[in-house]
Structure formats: C-alpha cells, structure tokens
Image (cartoon, rainbow, N blue to C red):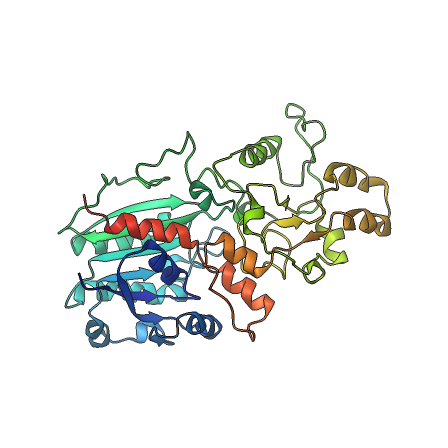
Length: 392
C-alpha cells in the first residue's frame, strides 16, 4: 500500500506527528498547519522535510485542501473555549472559529479523509462544538468512538486526562465494538478495576488559590507520619499512595535526566515560602505526577508536580516543624529537600517525545515549558492511531 497522506492541523511542536511515527504505520504528513510562530520553529527543527503552513486554518481555501488529497486528519484544536478553568465560551469563543471551519468544509471535500483523530481537554465532551462535530461526522458517513484517557493507563506516571475521538468512514468498521458512551479505557485492556480517567484524579483544574493549610474532617484522620496539604483530603492522600504502589506504572526516575544542574531549576525562596503547603511534591521513586501546564516553571500553583531531589531527607519532619519557625528558619528547613522543577526534557520524556526530539537553542526554557504544557501525550496518540487503523 502507498503511504497514507496525513494532514496535521494545529500541529504545535509535533506531538501528533511523533505519535504517527510511533504507531508504525506507513504515512507521510503532507502538510502541518499552525499559527504559533514559536511552535513552528520547533516543529521545523524536528521535521525539516514536512511542509509547514504558518497560516490560519480558516484562511485555507477548499481548493487548496482538496489538492492535498489527504487520507487522514490529525488535529488538536485550541482548548481554551472548553477548559473547565476558563470562560467556557465554547463555539462563541473566537478561538473556536477555525475548528468550526473544519467542520464546515469536511462535507465539501472532493475526497473525504478515511480517518480522523481529534484531541482536546476534558470538558470538550459536553460542549456545543463536540455536538457539532458528531453531527458532521454522522452526516458524512463516519463511525466514531470517544475516549477520556490519561497516560497512567499505559504505565506512564503523569496525569493528563484528555478527550479523544477517532473516526473512520463506514466503508470499514473498527476492530472493536463501538458505543455511544465515552470509553475510559482502551478496548481489550485489563485496567484491574480502574479506568484510564480515574487513574488521574489530581488535575490542574482541581487546584485553587488558597494557601492556608486545610483542616481535616474529624472522621478522616491523617495517617500517622503523613502530611496533608492544602486542598487535599485524606481520601486523596490515600489515592496518591495507591498510585505509588501500582507496579503497573513506571517510576518517575525512568524519565529523569542524568547530571542535571539542579541550581537552574530549584524553586526560588519566595515561592517556597508562599506555596510550600500546596505543592504536589514527588520523589524519583513515585509512580505519579500531576498534569504539567503551560505556566510550569513560571507559576507554581496548580501547574505541575515538584521533584524532591534530596531523596534521603524525610519530608514529614521538615513540614511538621514549620509552624513554629520564622520565615528565615522555614527557608533553611525547606531548602534541605532541594525542591526543583522538572526540566523541559523530563516533561518531554513523560509526554512520550522520542529522545531525538529536541528544541532549538534559541527557544528559552520558559517557552519550552509553555509549548510542552500545550502539547499532548505521544504514546496515547500512537495507540489510538493503531486502534483506528486496525481491521476487524
């Protein structure tokens, strides 16, 4: 068979492209489209032979799209209209305009693509945009399946719960029975009683802005020796412990860089003092981390987990001593933990980007965090592409 011709919309730094490569199918990205100039620099650096169109999708005429004669669309439309911590403007948000144009033009293509994969945030599944997508797919003769998936179900210690949809023309059925319900696991996967979405209970949308310590309900005492952080219940602490004991998930140490100059990534003193009670602190031996967002490395609160580099220091005695100390003494105590941000490369590893993927030198650390926070998990995409193309 000739390689499948793939159109990559909202291409970003190339997460979909990497997932396509990892899936092992014979394919060629005939065009990647994105308006983000910084992301385009990174994409071009890693995929120099792929035609990159730095233009708005709604500005591409139907005739130009038809000329590509593509078999598959991979797309990750802007999530801001649908995110649970945003304004939830949905289809009225100007950033949804390009996606609505895709839906408008899909029935008018000379040759409809055989396959479509879409990724977005949790919240998209209850949007008007999603309803428009489903109506368009059904009118064009597609079968489809929706998912809510997070990387821990593939053994990856990072929560990143996302909505996915795979669709194919009805000329060929999926290799698994479809349902009109949103699946929370891969078909045929033994999830041992927990779904891919429930394995990621600690999302950035759950965090708020209060920095005072949370009082425990009297009927839910904190386990002896454990520290309960602000906005965390005893039940959530138990879930974290269960995650760390889940041997089906890899340890964070498998994704960390060697010989990191941690002085570049240590939390500054002001952040340590202000946010110490709401940090999600993990060790290299942990099997979990919270979702990394685009503000990671710049903002502390709700943007992702913090790594404890001093693994030989017990965290509970440090935190239990803070109440009676001055700010200066607190800093001394907290500094013994050597709390640092994950590096951009480590986050890329958790997202499944291959070792050969890298950033041009001119892309700053802040820009790298921002681009990765807007990206997706490559391994999840690769498995979905394989699932989408598999024959019954």
